[in-house]
Every structure is written in C-alpha cells, then in structure tokens.
Image 1: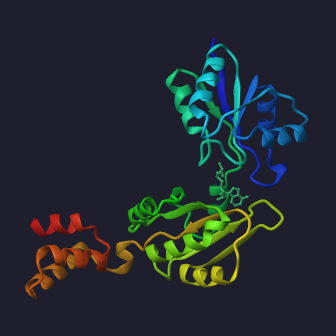
Image 2: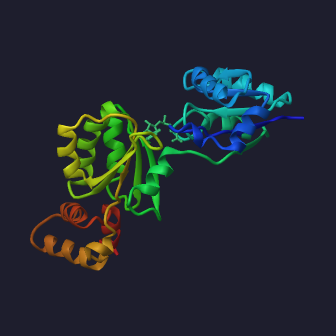
Length: 275
Ligand code: SAM
C-alpha cells in the first residue's frame, strides 16, 4: 500500500512555534524531504528527533521528486519541510504535491507558520480580500509586467522581499501604485526585532533612502480604491468619453484617457461605447 506525503510547516523565527503535531509528524515519518538538510538537522536536534533526510530543493526537484515518489509508492511515509514556514508557499513543495497527487498518493498538510498570513493579520490593512504575489521577478521586464497586472488590483497585496532588494522594490511599487498608497513593512516576524512600519509608499521611499533594510520582510500593500469610492459610474465615464470625442479626440484616445482617469478597463469602456 502507498505511503503518504505530509507537508510540515516549521518556525519562521521562533523555535517555540513548532507545534506538537508537527513534531509528531516529523518523528513518525519514515523519512524527511528537506529544502536544506543542514537547516532541518538543527530543528531535529532541537526536537531530539533522528530521521533520515533527503534533499529536495529548486535545482534537484525533478530528479529528487521522482525518487521521493518511488519511496512513497513503495509504502514509506514522507514529511516535507522547507527552511522556514509553510512548504509550497514560495518554497519547494508545489511540484512534489502535484507529482504525488497525480500518482494517487494521499497528501496532507499540517497548518502552521506562514510569513504571509502572519504579516497580513497585523498589517492594519483590509484582510477581507487579498492576493499573494510572492517575490517580484528580478528581471526588469517580468517585474514590470507583474506590477502592470496589479495596476487595478483592489485587494490587499502580499509581497515577499529580500532586504538587499527592498529599497529598489519600494521605488518600483511607488511608480506602480503612487505615493499615497498605504503599505505595511512587517519585519523579523516572531523574532527579537519584530517590527511593523505602517506608512504610505511616498513616506516609505523617503524612509528607506535614509535607513538600510535589515532582516526578513513581508510587504503588505493596500489595494486600489474601488471605483465606487472614487465616485465615477460607468455611465459617467462614458459621458466623459463622448465629451472628449465631441472635442475632437479619436475613440481610441478618448477611451485610453478615461480609462486612466477612472480606472475602468479600456475593454469595458470600448464595449459600452459600442453598445
Ligand atoms: N514558505 C515560507 C512561508 O510560509 O512564509 C516563505 C518562504 S520564502 C522563500 C522566504 C520569505 O518569506 C522571506 O524572503 C521573507 O519575505 C518572508 N519571511 C520569512 N520569514 C520571515 C519573518 N520571520 N519575518 C518576515 N518575513 C519573513
């Protein structure tokens, strides 16, 4: 009979955050798939657990994933851990879960630490609807495309970022969302120097021009104002399109301008204008 894959979250800073159930899952597994076996060994030593470890990380995941699947299909139970937090969330795991699920293996996850949710909950920004954006790409083109796709995003957005890239990222967020957009910098969560800085992107650009970012950060960015909040209905936006066209603008130019002014997508304005 096939074994199982269990995703085991680990502390994002404070070792006391390992839950009894997580420790039990590690102790009961036949083997542990770890992102960095040295990091996991420290945790196992802290818990007094001895267990065979196999490495599973970004650059060996295809080869290692197949080996892990073979062992599970042969009846062994595997616990998967990343360096910190929940496996498969901006961490290795997603592909292993898919591989196991496609091969009929039972996959379970133990709930536990996740930097994104911990940060969101204390950000002071709306938590009712949110999107997880992970790390922005390091290539200029992909990063710009990612931010462009978020231009009209009204939900609260969660970003991960490394400290040495934070200042540049703040500049990019400022360009994308404007200086008045609120942001919370959630730093060193669960650690000695845990801190949440709540400000606007304009203030953040000034702040990080003077302060070097240190430690681990999650950025929580407020979503765009709902269109109703800026007080423009589709009918009013269309009226503006008509006025601009009456003044000599082409339909294309008028739609582009009104889309920028009101936040209505260009397609919506075109379709409505045609109707
Ligand atoms: N899977 C992990 C989770 O569930 O949170 C995330 C792993 S991702 C490779 C690492 C990123 O998570 C860091 O660059 C940082 O943005 C965020 N992070 C991890 N630990 C953190 C902490 N203690 N405080 C703030 N951010 C943290």
